[in-house]
Image 1: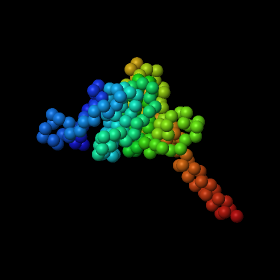
Image 2: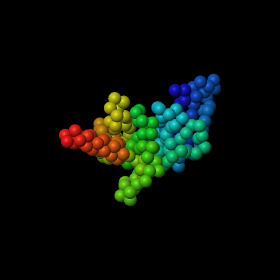
Image 3: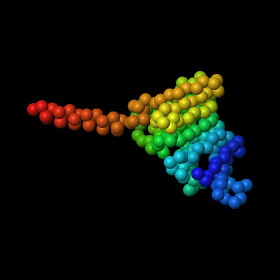
Length: 196
């Protein structure tokens, strides 16, 4: 709550601490944070040390404020500059970004490094959870619904607002489905045993 971040066409990230007496200088500066203009910054609302930036270099970078010498992760999945990003209010590892490529990407950092089939790898890295491609113009902004998890609103430069919800199969994961399926089988076995 005491930190502010600023980014710009100088490719830098500047972090400001409003508790400091001298607010004319940032407390941290990351020079050449991206290969292009840095368009947006978002602080993780759950993990106070994590922030993300989006750039004209088509990437999203994840940073740990305890060590700003290098990125924690680079997220590749957009085909044009990233305009905005926002962390999910309900999960510290979920982040979304929008781009001039007409898409909103939803990322799950907990999936970084997970094994993928060749077919899944064609769709992007494992941390790229979902791409919303319903817009016909550059997506300029979006927001998570704080009352309904996985529901978002996005707006494009042609003044089209879309409210959308990801299908549960996308974010629930196979592990939860397997657990639920096996729990149902256990229940069926228990019912069968009662009848005999």
